[in-house]
Length: 142
Image (cartoon, rainbow, N blue to C red):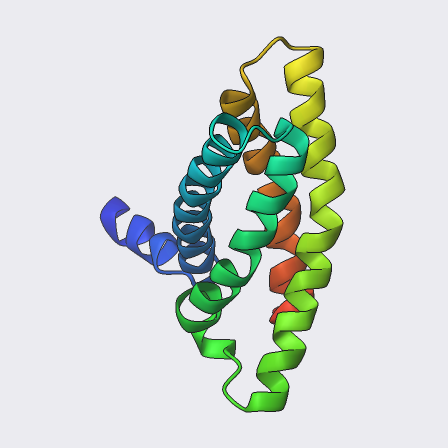
């Protein structure tokens, strides 16, 4: 009896979407962290400039995967709708960039974290914001 209650919760569309969003986000966070590290360590960029570039690189990657997998029931397939969705996710994620960068800066300067660890925390916190807005506005799920 208890097992069937767990299954119904685990298969609830919101839980499935959130799980997929986290998987996509974690994968993108890994890509973003590697790009951040490369830009700081090998291109000698400031960690905030490098983070901005790394974030921008993963925005489009996440839209493609989220559209095809996370929000597949509401995915954009027509060219115009796809471009509108891409624009919406860029607005959502674009507004999250200052939040993520501010958190990154605070964790490094006030918390004393190494920039790569601080970036992980900033990604997680800003990810909650992005999930809420992406699901509500980009893919218009109530």
